[in-house]
Length: 216
Image 1 (spheres, one colour):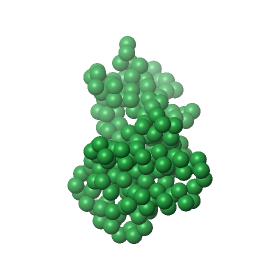
Image 2 (image 1 turned 90 degrees about the vertical axis):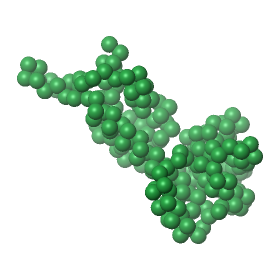
Image 3 (image 1 turned 90 degrees about the horizontal axis):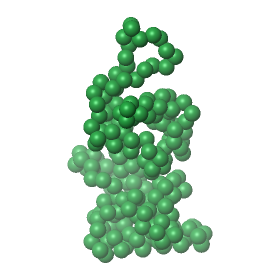
Image 4 (image 1 turned 135 degrees about the horizontal axis):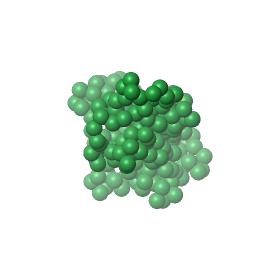
């Protein structure tokens, strides 16, 4: 297991005064979570509590420069048996644990653990979006409809309130910021850090049209 105290000392030794203060805030929050018996060491929760104290926000922790923050949070989660992310299936968890056990360096092990959890979360969100869109959207290709430069998107069925809220949340500013995504001028969903396209051109604009039709 990772010793959070050891991780904190290692990170502070290579940080400036400002970052040392931020690390202390993250460490104090994680310690308090443990002392109150809470297993919640998610970035959303720790980031919210940190922001209230003038520490790193959730997005700052998720950024590339927040690697030490993430490793410290993951170290506390592993040390206390808490959850750095949502629970995953036993199959994925056992495979990840086998991989992590082969990493000797506790700092690297904590960061790899975080990245594995983030990857599982993003894959789950992508599958949910794909299934939702594929199930409820068809392209009207009837010959009675005159050709247009852009395809007309129509709904096969009305969305429930739950489904509509899920789609609206998926393209909301908060969700995009939390996952480090952005929308480019052609409607593609793009990873803000790497520039990698998560969904192709027109994906976001298509969802917005779907939601707009639901309001009419």
